[in-house]
Length: 198
Image (cartoon, rainbow, N blue to C red; front, side):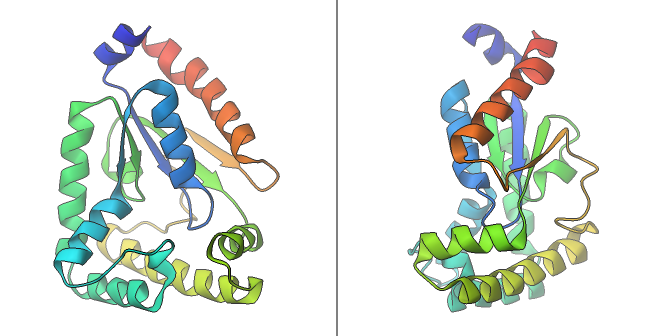
C-alpha cells in the first residue's frame, strides 16, 4: 500500500479559519499516511523573520506584531507570492500535506479539505490555547479574519471562509474532538481519494 501511495504522488490540502484546528489535523494526517507536512503559515513566518519580526510565540499571528505583519503583506504581495511558488513546487513533488489557505485555489489537482467551525467555537479554542479571555479571543479572531480575508480577496479574488467551491470535503468540526475529526477524514480519504487512485 505504501509503494502505491508513493507512485500516486498524493497531495492533500487542509484549510480552515484560524482556530479551527487545521494545523493539528494536517500534521496528524501527514503522520498517519507517511506524507510530508508543509505549512503556508510556517513559510510566511520564515519570511517575517527575514523582515525583522520575531514570530517565536504560540499564536503569533494574533499578536500585535503578527497583525502588523499582516499590514505589511497587504502592501507587498511578494511575501505571499514567494510562499505560493514554494508550495506549488513542493506539490509537484507529491506525497505531501499542505496546510495552506491558497493552495486549494491555486492547485488544479489534489484532495482538498475545509474544516469549518463557528466563531464562538474557534474563540473558545484560541482562549484555551493562549490563556486569554473568551472576549479577547473573539476580538482577536475578528481582526485576524478580517485582515486575512482582505489579503486573499485582494490578491486572489476569493473570499476566505465563504467560497467552498474548490473543496472535496467540508467538515463541520464544532461538535467533534481531534480524534473524531481525524477518524472521519481518514475514512473519507481512504474511500474517495486513495482507493480511487490505486
